[in-house]
Image: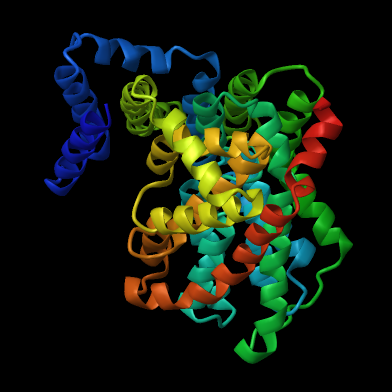
Length: 428
């Protein structure tokens, strides 16, 4: 069987090197496995279909749809205005406001790319107007966008929960404290460099302005409490929360702010279907390949080997951090999760590591890859918005990765940062 696994791995690697998309290379590896194992080829499409036969995974396209609706309805304008009025009077206020906006927006869309694209243009334009260097404004926006998949709702958490058989509700709640810490750490970084970078202080416009922007954006700001409150109270599941959030986003766009038109629904749905298709085809191919690995006993073989070699849970987590950070630099986050979950999660379980803690560690590691070259999909987004070169952005982002790494180390060393709130809300 080990010879067969090496052969399948060879097919997988060769197809990737040949330029095949990742989902195609995983599918080819699965077909190669059943062919070499003398099994029926019909097993592969069956396992692909089974991978989609999970109610929680319905949340993925619904959260994608909600993010697209909110973006088309220009909800972010009101959120940025509110964040600026609350915290914009500090030195480096526009940078603080950008981070606070991302923290609020994270409670709506659950995607780093959507966060950067949705509010990035407004934030970067405001910072550039205030005298920030374009690359600095873009770097702050990119770093803050990584909060999107950590503060719930979160598309990567949905995929992790379905694939690793972990409660999505617990993952959502477990991401709240790390997400807030990420925002606070970035704000601390802004405070440290404000004088050196020459960030100016804006005049405080008064509590009346805070009240005005809060009232203006009230219904938009209620989106995260609606989603999280409904889940925490047990009124609806994460999947049902996604459906409710979509209806609420349509309500805001059509009836409250009237910034959405019927003719926009077509493009919104097309974009949602395209994005969902990319995500789901990866899930399906990974499901088939995961089944091949399972019956080949790859996790069962590797888990005792990893446990016996490393022995210490903390050392295991540190090794995982290094591996995931490296993988995140070269592979899209969802694809990397689908490949690594069958191998790393059983090993984490053997060490007694809480699956919620491990899931958030895995997601944060891989999301950092979105703001780091050579892949850096969020970097590409903010580069286009700020009109700076990718090389310049690659240098400008480096200092802003440091506070995020500090948070990663903190949740690695102290599990209660990810487990205390889920245990409090949902019980152990």
